[in-house]
Structure formats: C-alpha cells, structure tokens
Amino acid sequence: MGSGSGILGKKKAIGAVGGVVLGLTFGLLCPDIGLSEQGVRCLAILLGAIVWWVAGVLPTYATGVVMVALFAMVAGIDSSVALSAFSASTWWLLVAAFGLGAGMKRSGLLKRMALAIVRMFPNTFVAQVTGLFAAGTIVGPLVPSMAAKASMLTPLAQGVGDALGYERFGKPMQGLFLATFCSIRSVAPAVLSASIIGYALLGLLPEGVRAQFDMLHWFLAALPWFVLVAVLNLVAIIVIYRPDGNSSTKRNAVAYDAGEAADPDGGLSGVLDAPHASRLPNSSGSSDALDASDAPGAPSSPMSAHEKRMAAIIVITVLLWVTEPLHHVAAHVVALVAFAATVACGIMGKSGFREDISWESLVFVGIAMGLANVFDAAGIQQWVVVAAGPAFEALAGNPYAFVLGAAVVTVILRFVIVSEIAYLNIVMVFIVPLCAGIGINPWVVGFAMYAVISPWFALYQTATYLAAFYSVDGQMVRHADMAKYCLLYTLISLIGLAVSIPYWQWMGLL
Image 1: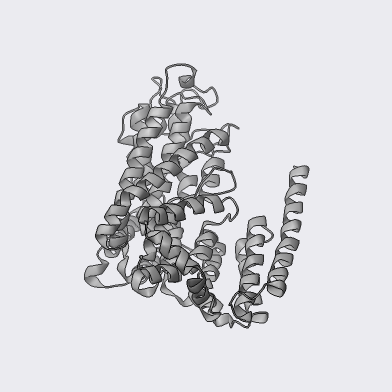
Image 2 (image 1 turned 60 degrees about the horizontal axis):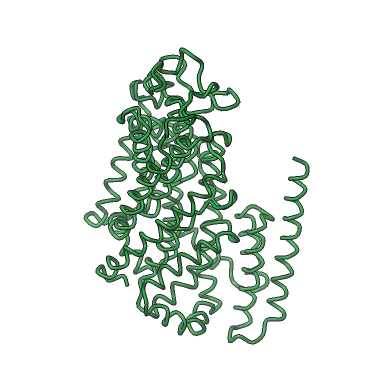
C-alpha cells in the first residue's frame, strides 16, 4: 500500500510540474502560427490542464476551476464567458437527471425493475445472460449515471452466477459480468438520457443541431448502431462464455449460507424469493451484494409508496421527453419539474440532494462545456478551421474514413485523456466548426467518438468499468480477461458505425 501511494504521489508531482512547464513553454516559445496572443495563452493553459487531468494532480473539477481562473488572469477571458454553460439548459437538465437517478435508487425502484426482469427468464446460462442484458438495457435510459447502474446491477449478476453454481472468475461468471456491463455501455450512446456523456455531447453541438436531436430523433439516428452492437455482443457473450460442463459449473463454496438463499437444484428461485436470507455474500463473506427480498425493491414484496410515486414520475417524464415534438416543452423543463416532484413526494431529501448527486461531475461538466465559448472568444475555432480545414475536407471525401478515423483516434487517445467528458469537450470544440465547413453534421462525429469513448483495456480508463468491477470487490472476474473482450467490443462498435453510415447519408447527416 505504501509503495503504491508513493508511486501515485510521484505521478502527481511529475504531472503538476510537467503541466506548468508545458504550458509555459508553449505560451512563451510558441512560433507564429497565425493565432492571436490571447489564443496562444488559452491553448497553453488548456495543455497544462490536460496534463493535470491525465496525471490526476487535482480532482477534475478542481483543475477546471484553476483553468477558468487562469483564463481570466493570464488570457483576459472574462469568467462569465468561461462559466456561461452554468446558465445553459443542458447543465440544468443534467442536474435534474442526476436527481431523478438518485430518486430511482433511493426509492428502490431501480432494484425492483432489475430483479423483476431477471425473474422473467429461465435458470440457464443463455436465459440469464439474456435477462441481465435486458435489465441493463431497459434500466439504462432511466438513470444518467452509468457508474450507478453498474454498481447496482453487477452484484445482481454475481448473485445469479452464484445461484447457478458458477465458479468465481470462470468463463460463465465472466459472461454474466459482461452481459450486465455491455448492456449498460451499449444503450448509453443510443438513448440521450442513459448517460451524462450524451447530455454533455448535446451541449457541445451548435444550437441548430441541438434542435434536431431531441430524445426521439437521437434514438432514431443511433438505432442501426445500437441494434447491431447489442445483438452481436449478446451473441458473442453467449458463444464465448457458455458453460462447457466442466469445473466452471461447480458450486462456489462461499456463495451461500446453505439452506437460506440457495435452491437445492442450483436455480434462482431461492435467491429471489427467500424470505429471510436472500442476500448473497461476497468473497469476504459480507452481505454487500444486491438483496433480492428486502423492501423496498424486491419484486416479491409490495411496492412502497415511494416506489409508486417514483414510477409515476419516471413514466410521465419519459413520455414527455419522447413526445417533445408534439408539446414543445423543453426536456430540461420537464426534468426540472420531475425533480421537484421527487422532492415534493419525500423521495429525495436534503441528505440525498447533498450526497447522491455528483456535484463534482456537474461542476466539471459546466466548466468543460464553457471551453467552446472561451475558444470562440479567443479566435481559436476560426484558426482551426483555416489551419486544418483542407485536411479534413480531403478526409471528408470518404465518409467511412472520416467517421471510423474519428473513432479509432478516440480509442487511442483515451489511454492518455482519462475523462470521457474532458476528451469530448477538448476534441468537439475543434471538430464542430470544421464539420460546418465541410457539410457534415457534427452529431455524427460526436456519436462516432461516443460509441467507443469508454474502453476498459486499462483498469483506469472508465469509471463505469471500475464501478462494476469493484462493486463486487473484484471477486467476480479478472481484469485481464475482461480487457481481452474490450477489443472485441471495440471492433463490434466500429462495425456498427460502418453499417450506420449509409443510414446517416439517407438521413442527410453525411
């Protein structure tokens, strides 16, 4: 533990110094590149901030605050410009969406829905993989935090594997883990409300493009990619991780307190219906896994008043989001009213408002979204169009090269830029004006990056994967095994993008 902390401390120290040195070097020694002095200073500050983000010198939001202060003090960019996103509708939509997600979790409705979906499927590997994939897909659009969904649903997947008698770290257990994780990951780019990343991407698009992509039209544009990626991943998981009848299906000795949660036949009925002891212990023997019988949230128990109220709020909210073209009430207004209803109904109290909403993420998103206005004020966007326009015009001549190239570059750079939202904000601020110049809808490029923006080749790359992996104390799968599947998931995502290109051309987006 001590050596690990020492290495981490050295990384932060090197990153802190390196970011300052890089920023100063670029700002003071940058040759004449046709950019104003103010623009050069803004880029220098951003370069230093990127190094700090990569090295984890400060929390992402704290680095963002330092960046805003430097924009004002060094580059002369008024803080009202850098912080303008906090008054934007997208940021307030995020606040409300986080509040609704917290209400779903606090009321127990999310747990009930997931368990009810799993109960609908037979007690076989194929059926339960399908059930877990369906649970992640259906619950996905209702909660914008992928990490929250992963931390709630992965213990359920482990419990299913234990009930079916699969060894921890064995292939069938890996399949259950991937069914849960990949379903959460796949539905996110397809449904705007399924992840904070989608809202952040929407906020980075020009006003006219944002108007095109309400909840319904976003889903319709993403539909071919989503269907292909979901189906191919489900089939791949079933084929690769299906039990072979050998040691992988032995009952795990630590999975049960015999006679309580376990079904004598190795099925799930005991796990989901046991009246007193259906909580499946984790590897250490503690009862941290998802409880299938405690109220609220258990499908066998009556719905609590809070669950009923939360369900009504969510149903009405989703219906209003989907039908926005008919009533023209903006999504953020609907979400804010729904969040207020959650508070009024007693589902979300003061402690929940403080603890269950990721204010750190919201502050960072607001600062990162403001980069577009900063770059516009400093003339950087116009400079990028002039400097890189010809190269992008040549690349845009082949839509397959343009779209797939953006995705491949994203996969590579995400080893360095750890935050998905930071990456999107850094890249989209340059891409948007270029797309306008070559007649490509920037949503397509943003979606191409979004489709592959959360790899898990390395353990540190994606918060959602970390939430899934550590929600079961790392005792369900080995990361090395999961990293191998990440390559296949990425290839499937690229195939989905290639298949979607003719569809986007038909829609007039390319």
